[in-house]
Length: 266
Image 1 (spheres, rainbow, N blue to C red):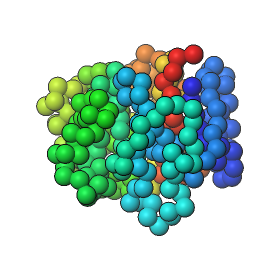
Image 2: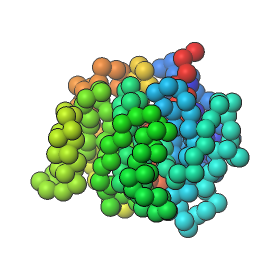
Image 3: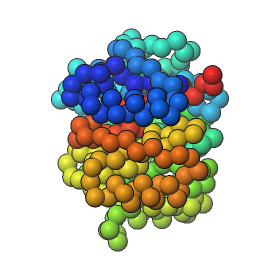
Image 4: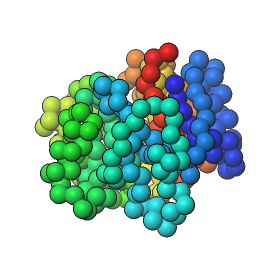
């Protein structure tokens, strides 16, 4: 089951939400809306599920939202869906935890360390590995991305293959990430990307929503959309469903950011 904040029903998100929800319904995907979230970025403040099916709720107080504390969402007190949940005071956004299909490997950007200055780095890594019951791979965060989230830089195509943003730069973060991931034994595949500047996520095709049968791919009404759809169709063994977004990406996120799934088979 997919979950979204009920705030998506309100302007300025109404049009994007209507397009997305229509696509989900027409492709047989069950979803519901929940109340209590202080912003639309459900991925970040909802619990994280490990490979055992355990739900873990982390503290959600990212430094990039310091100027808008009213949007901090405490899952434990503000939402609390009917799932048995463990709680941790580690400051970790769900968008900064990218899991492999088995959920036994998770990629987290090094932003986690600056968000938790009270922790020793090695101790923090050990604690996260134990909580998530997974091998953790830390990658360098993108300084131009105000969130520092891993889900804007890398996604898993399979257990041993990852997707990263394709850029025209010959040297830089993406190349360092690619080299580091290859050294860890991953096959690295470049995925379409169009940098739009500022906080905008327009052109961030990696921020797709994946379900067992579909890839809901964000498109933005720009020239690179057609190629992104073509390349996605050649990579995934799932149906590719384009979802045209106009407002949400300009706020800094896309489909993975606004969605959450419980992973429970029904």
